[in-house]
Amino acid sequence: MKYITKYKSPNYNSRKNSKIQLIIIHYTALKDTSEALSYLCKKEKKVSSHYLISQNGTVYNLVEDKFRAWHAGQAFWQEISDINSISIGIELDYNPNGKNNKFSVKMIKSLKKLIFKLQNSYKINKNSILAHSDIAPFRKKDPGINFPWQSLSSSKLILKIKKLKKIEIKIMEKWFNSHNLKSKKQKIILSLSLIGYDTREVYINYKFYNKLISAYRIRHLNGADKIKNKSIYIELIQHLFNYMLTKN
Ligand SMILES: [Zn+2]
Image 1 (cartoon, rainbow, N blue to C red):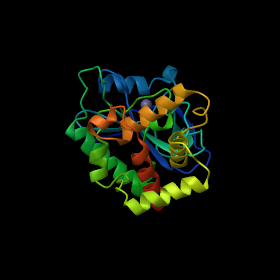
Image 2: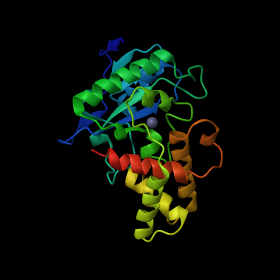
Image 3: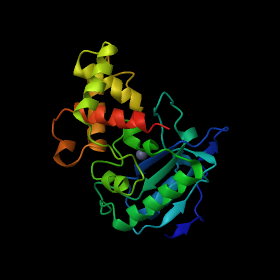
Image 4: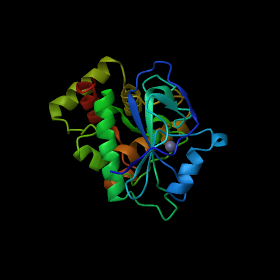
């Protein structure tokens, strides 16, 4: 893995003693690595990320881990809205509408190595490797529908969600009922919220609800289920159950 430190972004500030807890994956939606480097290192753009990974797998370190890079924007996870202070941002040189519209093998290999290294350095939980679309589902789509989450889970970098036995589904149902949650929609919203998603607005605006469901589907479902209008109910209670077992 080629590792380059000579490009530096001026767009950062202090973490003010916040602990690094999350890794956020982005795509640049720019033409290529050189355009991304100039964008992320330009003062007027007021954005940055700790890392940029090129199509050929080169890793550029633009902001030191100890500083607060500006990649998340308005975001929310687990009741925290200042995500920049608690995260490491990784940009991928990828544009869904450009020539760089593939997550290359070399890029993903470097990404995995980097995530592995960061997870060990900062003791980052497997539940805490997130998409930009997880922490900002109402405005962001990256890293998008084609990002190989499956490959990250096969490499044991992120939580592998195990299917539940019938008895375990019953336990979850019982638990929901004991909290007086009757409709599937209520159960879905509570599950999303416990996992970490921003559900503050979804009760009052169905457009927000639909966007959140779509963000979840793209991130966590496979194949045709990603886009099909299929309910995420079963996947979500499986996710919540697995999440509760592996929280710490
Ligand atoms: Zn992003």
